[in-house]
Length: 408
Length: 144
Image 1 (cartoon, each protein chain N blue to C red):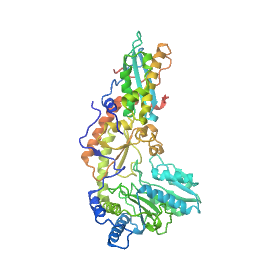
Image 2: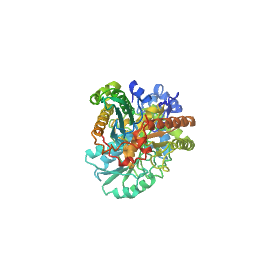
Image 3: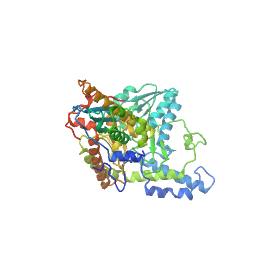
Image 4: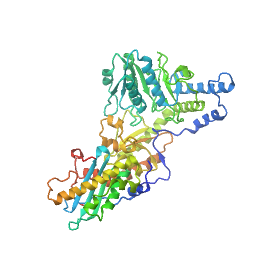
């Protein structure tokens, strides 16, 4: 049996990792590279004015998607920088009030590593567990809040398993205790409705390249009412009201603005289409014996499906479906050789992480791609199970949890 | 991850996949690794009791492409060797043959361990210490 399914045209199902730039976004960006190339901070001539105008229009576009005020949008180099700015910015500014921060074990490394850095600088961080479905238990958060807590950081949508946290409820809790609330919305903006006039969120990290914009540009939402103060982390000129210095990349900003405008226009319709595609994918994959979905089945975005295929290792599965671009929670696919910490935080055993694949779909995914991917995965899982001593034992009725493994 | 041609070859055309009957007196079974680590290799050897030469071998592996390739390669290499010669196979030779990158060298180490475990099992069974079956041997009929 041919192990490797060679697809004529590669299929991209890794939208959670990054997205292609929408051609309409590219069109919007191009003039700002060669024609309107002025520095938006050049106040003395038309080149600068034109660039500045484009920046402010884009700012309005980003704010519109979130029902925020344009003055609340600060441009950064991406969501990672926004996370750094929010967390370090709050910590440094409010250190006099307290030095305790709270976050969740399933956050993106951009948040977790920043928190670790603050711990090295003398701050105290509580990393909350999540429930098996990936959702935060509000009672746990409430119990963790202290008089000296200055920030809570919880992502809106998880990049690995796609679960959606109850941002409104978490925010309300933080408001009641007068603790600032930061939300990493890199995977959420343009995918779930976010109304910052209603949501009690103080800071929100935004990405462009997760929503058909270019890489290398993002933003941080910083609430004005009530005013949130942060200490800038990038110095040199005082741009963005002193919160983030550096010449603004007009073409990138225009790109992000256009991407967000398109998202606002198409979100509802796209979500419906994607939900149908995701269901098609889910039905197809769950026909494989013992395959199961990781993370809450109801509180999740339609773009993401994280599935485990027991007794088959993730990297070998990826090798067999070459031509289908996805990612895996297997240790073998990570540079650190550690299995997915998100799946571990769900309480799943490591072998589940090793046999997990993340499928994420998007604007350009077609039903045919879904079908071909399902076929490739089905064939490859069957092939690898033929090679797997674990599957052999399982078929023979052996309970693998009773075995004392001789690991090296 | 860029795989070497040899790793891809072993993955697409693995050699000697399958199982012997672990209860067979001429068979030695080695199972190494752990599901929690993402690597489990089962290597079985069939030994000529008179000459002590490994006549045949089978493998099954749960693991990445490099792990599958390492164990597949090992089944080829042990055939025709005596038990003592099989124990001489070094992981570095496996890694070199398959051009494994540094991050995958541990797969070759596991394959070397599998050989040792299979040989040890065979020898233990010859010595009559059949009391303890390796916990790994499945109750299946031989599929050679």
